[in-house]
Amino acid sequence: MNQKLLFAGAFVIVAAAIIGLSGNNKSAPVRTISVAGECLTSAPKDRTAITLRVTMLDKSAAASMKQASAKIAEITSYLKTQDVQMQTTQFDSYEKTEWDRALQKSVALGYETSIAVEVSADNMEAIEKILSQFAGQQNVYSENLRMFTSAEAMKPVLEECLGQAVENARTRANALAAGDGRRAGKMLSVEYGASMGGAVTRPTANFLRSAKMEMAADAVAYSGGGIVAKDTEVTVNVSAVFEIK
Image 1 (cartoon, rainbow, N blue to C red):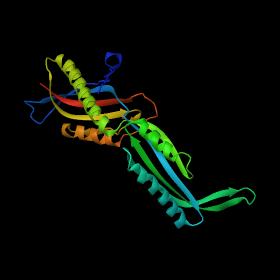
Image 2 (image 1 turned 45 degrees about the vertical axis):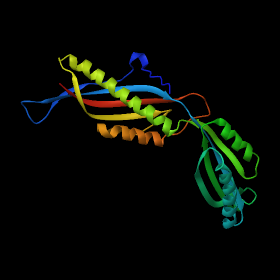
Image 3 (image 1 turned 120 degrees about the vertical axis):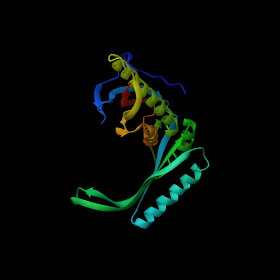
Image 4 (image 1 turned 180 degrees about the vertical axis):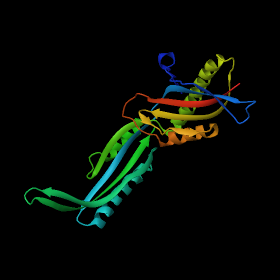
């Protein structure tokens, strides 16, 4: 996978240094330095998705749900024969009303049941085949056609970018410590935040061992983007604390 690491302005990395003394042993204080680093990269959008929604309206709530369930079962039965992934994203049943201008009040139309299934594939042809199969069918709607980066493709990109951001932070720590004739040693802790295609993950404070685990969780949580060929932009920011030797 080709990945392009960008560092704006040869290093648009906002870095702040705070050098302080810590430790209970006054004869041998531990010096630490806190610096920030940034990694900019991108991940290819490797999957295409579409949402198929079935909507049924009936005077009986039970009949509405039965009809919608039967239709979605027909759709999922077909999808099982295709090389796609699917998951149910909606199952709602409610009384539908409409405002009657003549009567100046809401009028009940019946009970409407909506069931939606998200279908994704690693190629557009598979999605086109599904659209052709169900296009024009009564009470079946296709919506939210999009491309996105899968969790499997995003995870290694995030982990590599996290490592690059930490190395940038270490480089800055060494540069700042050099003025005192010292160098950066062991990294004591790290805090990071990630932005993927405009979706910002929660900032997370953690020790080194859990940082990549958190990044993996963020990768699983992420999906999004429009039906365009442009890769998903990824930004990782870190704030790391190093021991100064």
